Length: 272
Image (tube, rainbow, N blue to C red; front, top):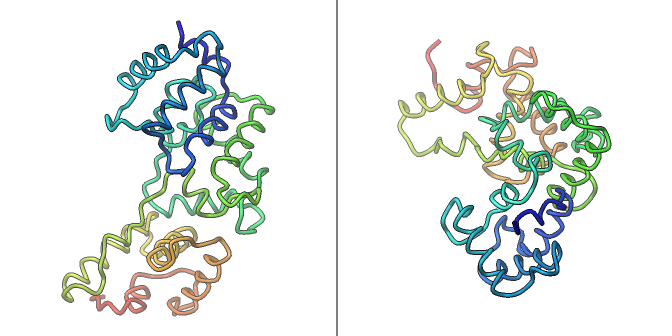
């Protein structure tokens, strides 16, 4: 079978090819890019397969089987599913295993793996993260494989190519797109609406349900709040803003933000 010729491909090789064809880095390839892509794949993986008609036939077969969104584009996820062996297909591990509901969970992860609080995650810290992730899935991964995975993930997600991941890079890996605060237009509604929205907001970030935002809950709130005005927030920014927020809101100085403190901060009247 022709598809067998893909067996030689590993994640790093796959990525190299993908990035070459997804030149505008939008996560999918379409149209002429697709033809070029399949032709290249065939050439790379088996010289005898490079005849034009075979490429078209293979493309047809692939597209009908795998173009899940039926939009004539090929998403990186769809393609990875198609041609990478299961153990190399770790790009999808995150999306499948750990969809994140909110930025509080995300910030917990960030704080845990940015062990030196540099505001960045180094290759070494990323490796620790991947190792934990595979352990959660009860999968044994050899250490040289882990190094290779780490390198590949750095290549994919380190957009500014400085050899480390920042807050936004990690958000991309973990597919965190949800900024909860975007659902609320705080200024566009009556007092009652604001109060109701406020309750929802507080509950959303108070994951531990203690009646106060603390630790990663404050981080998550600050990240989303800043995301409204400045989409690409860095780790150091976050720490500064966290300090400002606590100084401003944490009236009783216990390092947490109680519900009434946040209400005061946001200018919402709530009954005690």
